[in-house]
Amino acid sequence: MYKLLVADFDGSIVDYTETLSSQNIIAIRKLREKGIDFTIATGRRWSSIESKIRILNINIPVILYNGAGIYHPVESRFLFIKYLSNREVKDSLQFIKIYYEKIKVGVYYEDMLFEDEEALLLLERENEKIIKIFLEGKEEDLKIIKTHIDRNYNNKINAVFSAPYYLEILPYGISKGNALKMLINMLNISPKEVIAIGDFDNDEDMLKLAGLSFTLINSSEKLKKVANFILDCNPNDSLYRIGKKIINLK
Image (cartoon, rainbow, N blue to C red; front, side, top):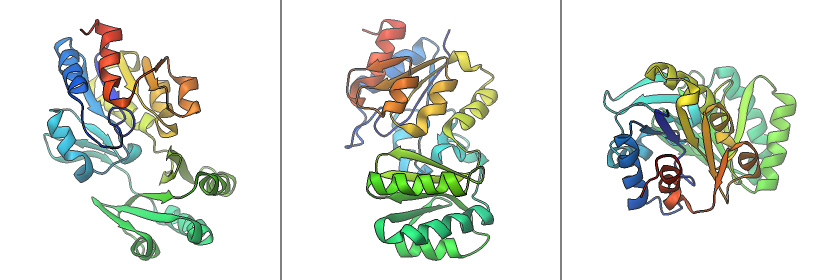
């Protein structure tokens, strides 16, 4: 029996409009009636996702910053938060400066987002509470940067694509999958009791951990290879399709 459905947000349950569909909202309610709770695992910060969490009436912890944070929306506090170390920030700054002319840079500092020159200034300071860095640019340029990171900073920095044009720099060991491990321990459930849905590479280990996993027809090829089911629909219908498959949702 499944007890939890955890969903990536952008591209998995909402499209570019960020609008929660009535089908998905109803599906969440029906799943809860069957004893399957619901939460979000997103790369966003709390202030960027809070209104959606309230609409969905989520009262269990949510995964933020691609796994660097676990936040309780009822208690209004982080149950887990991991910052980039000074060493990780310095290493990141080195390769960011090399490729700066080809990319946009964003830094998540606490619950704030700084971009480009402001982001660089923040990275140059020490002992700041930087949670993650994101790089935006052409896919071919970001792939070169990721190869550079993997070759020169292996076991030091975690770099993962969250979209073809977004490369995210996270504290080493941080991922949605590892955050999900912590979350299910908090909820006292097992991985086999979890359903997960995602659409891009940063969701891979979360889908691998879950007892049942879904992705969408337009998702990354990496996700299609690991998901148990590929949904032939857009994000606005995804949770309805999952509910239909596991509880005969009408």
